[in-house]
Image (cartoon, rainbow, N blue to C red):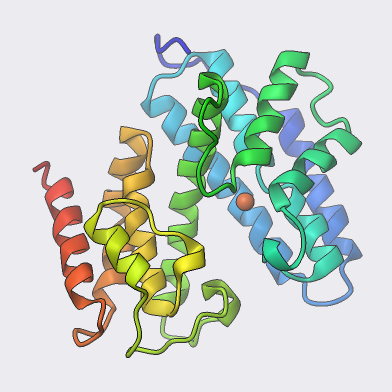
Length: 268
Ligand SMILES: [Fe+2]
């Protein structure tokens, strides 16, 4: 990857048009509530926007920027088919939506205008964007593109979580992966991740307050300064942590995480 001058405008309009019409077509096939699919379309557009912010902020060259934007646009293309077939976004109960996305890209030949090398890179990023961690020895360009998608994805998931968990209306339990909102319990593994400054795993969650902490730990798993700045500037993680009652067993970890984020924000 060359980090030269800011990329000239990267035109992905034909891909955007295809994506929108594919999403509309799949949504029209759904007989029940289509709002989860509408949210995925909005999420995909937001992730694309966040990726654009990253590639511009990090001054990627235009060919690299194009790969990142296409991977961001298509990262959740598998979500529509997943929801139509299984009516859930929980991969463990349905299918791996990253892999489903790769199948969709191949089946519709969405990347036919791209070079064979670029096709492989974009599909690798789509297929791996939802892994807990990238495999060791992932080729550097694949890792770079996938990490742009992963960072951009995290920023938008934080927005969605903040809207749900900090809002006045009762939130939808699917948003917190059906975790109980029990203020008396905490996951040791999540607390440990906070104090060890590493990202906590979904599998370690035991309750909603664990989820708030987990979202804070995403700060440790951001790869680009542009993204870290946006994370701090948006303040969604701060708000999620501040909304935790002071008496929860996560209190010390919450205070630790908040202090860390405040220090990062103040440039300490
Ligand atoms: Fe995803």
